Length: 240
Length: 294
Image (cartoon, rainbow over the protein chains, first blue to last red):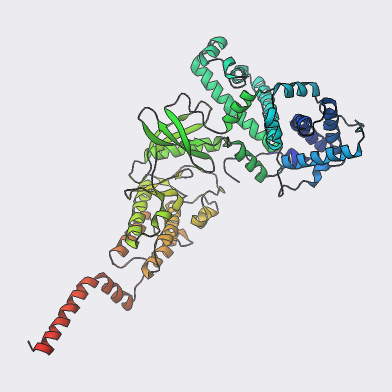
């Protein structure tokens, strides 16, 4: 293992096969949180599913994957987990369409809430155009967006718990700005938060370090093996 | 929702270093190691190219501390065979970096291909000089290998990548194995805390094995330098270099107990020009005596 990688890990993917129902369930919730939005948008675009059908298929997919232990057959030596999940998804939708009947909802299992309306709104705003035709790249980008969203939530929680709300505020205003025109300057942030420009840049640097650390943790959770994690991390660090 | 711009910006935090606010402009990627990435950059103030070693985005605090230590070690070792550091600091994205001389040239093994033995051994001696200098300052490199030695366009030799170097007397956890297996001394491969200068002697011996030929004395030097027990190796890199110098001068080497035949052969090889001249003279005399009777 490369020396740069953290040693303490907990893999959600590995926990999917746990014999402890609570562990397995928690792992599935974490997985659904990370993947439901990429799955929903992928179904809308690749399978041209209308919003309601895509929502049904998303829920159906996670439900069936949980009940039938879809992911138990995952072999990390053959593919990345993300690729395997998408293969399962394509197979699931193909079968569902062949059966030509509406998927049964529910049962007793309820996952983390999926806000399909919000996801649909995001999709409309995204102007995916031709890029959406490259489904691999699209799914990867949506997965990345979801990964970062989870990491940002955790970073916010950690900053609040540590009494570093200014640090997160600077990161949010500067790095999460929708576009460069709405991005404040360091001086504007310093005035707004009543601190020096040096403090702003120091806090921003620290927030970015924390962000990278949290992204690594979340990424590790979503990988089955050290090798997959290292490969994903390397690929994430290679900007096209 | 994370906008497209923000997504690209966040993704950028994981890859290319943010050089805003620094004197450097990114040119290209030069190489990637375990904990850091080396970029070619331009120093806009001095208008020259430099190499920037930047912490990889996956690196942890331990790696950040190692990179800082590497920069300090390099700064403390002012020697023509050791790459000089120009700058050290933190980028706007929070990553530690240092700037060093941009080294132009070839790695040692590629440079050595097609060169004669004397050239190869001369380069090896310059590596020994640099490493001996570091040892004299209490620094053990621990990762000497052809990829970490560059030979410049004027034959200058530079020892690179001091990322896992150890400072004498500095506490370090046992059981930590770092280095390159083919060049690692047994005690280093075991993760012993007792690793000292003789681990570098071992790596240099392996390096010499790749540069030398099959001559008995050279093989003996290589064998002594790469002895499994540290106590059986040369006590210092200077001793190793001195033995290689003796070999180059045609003298007896410490690593080989010569028999009479070895000594005679070495004497002939060492004085081959003088011997050839004397033999030619004697042949001429014989010719004059037998043919012209003078």
